[in-house]
Image (cartoon, rainbow, N blue to C red; front, side):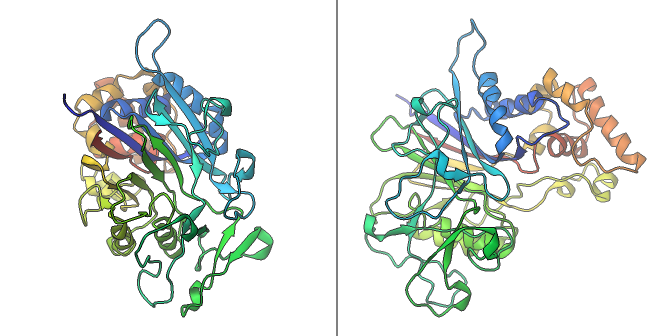
Amino acid sequence: MAAASHTILIWNIETYGRPMSRGDYSGVHAFISQVIEAKGAEVLMIEEFKSPGRHYIGNLATDLSPAEGEEGPTWFYDYIPGALIAPYSVGDTVAFDDLNWGSNSEGYAVVWRDGSLSALEAGQSKGRNGDSTKGQYLALSVLGLLPNVEAQSASPFRWEGGTVTENDLIASGYPTSGSAMVGVEAERKSKRTRVDYKARKNAALMSIRQLERCRRPSFCNFNFGTSVPATILAYHTPVASTSAEYAVQLCGLSEQVVMRTAADTRKLILGGDFNLISSTTIDACFSNFTQFKLTNSAGQGEYPPSTVHYDSQDCLDNPTEKDNFMGSPRDQILNRNLTNSSGGVFDVIEELHSNGDFAKAILGDEAIKLMVNISPHKLPGGNAEWTTAYGKLKQCFVDKKFDTYLSCAMLFRGYISDHMPLFQDFTR
């Protein structure tokens, strides 16, 4: 019997749930559905899930499920705020009411095909289809290993090896956006507790504080049909070079990532918008992941661009040059102990531009076509050339063909997100 193949997606869908001029999310959901179908995905974890998104996410699960009288798998949803209200101590029970949406009013959501996820024993989320009695499928990462920050190095957070037990895990904290130090913020802004580590030399790393509003990683368990599921851990790190680097390295010491022994066979998928903008910083952070046998799904040292823009003069002047529309490699995905795995960035822009099956499905979707009749997000004003470019995008839906990379990027960045989805393929 051939091994069953699986695909999961992790996607920063820009400020999902915000009040918007793009209608009722029908067009956005139609686009998301086409991506899921194109990849054959069973699970989608959404980052940058804004609190009002709870009013829309159920519609996405409904759209993915078969209509009444039709056959097919049912899809479900769950969501979770991204931060804790108060500092966590080892042994505390964390419930949904102990969470908040953080300084950016943000959390995570997941939609999955029936049977793909396992409910968590200690879940913290709203619950399947908004009902905790039907199981909770998401939780935040609250424990991690003690970092070794005594040595002056480019990667200060390192594990020294050995067998990890429950007693080695501590209450972990994460930095906030723009922080030059881990977890440092003005006193008036947050509740906090200081986690005092052993003496260290680096004064810039005197403590890691748990902040009321710092965004944490979130995880769910993929159902492998065995007693040991695969963990899917997503993290949308804070913005700014230093805080993003610290956050990624600390995520590498989280309970879901660390190996308990050298022979630990637990399966893990780790991905998200890490907000790292150069291969140098990515290499520095990923050096910590290798100690726990995590590998870059796109290939060692391969960091393709994952962000999209279209609102520069170069984009207007050179609408057929793809590089003009590609940004930094902020989104990364890694894995451990998966069989026949491959992954990376699902290049939506190239898929649209190739005018293959995916592009045809997008162009033929009435909900997306109606959405495009509304002016796109971040369309530069005061320039007739942009009005012309927008007109060409609408014409693409008449001609059933994308003419340039500009039209592809304007559709995606203007209506869906500035981040392309991450994917991970593997076999059971």
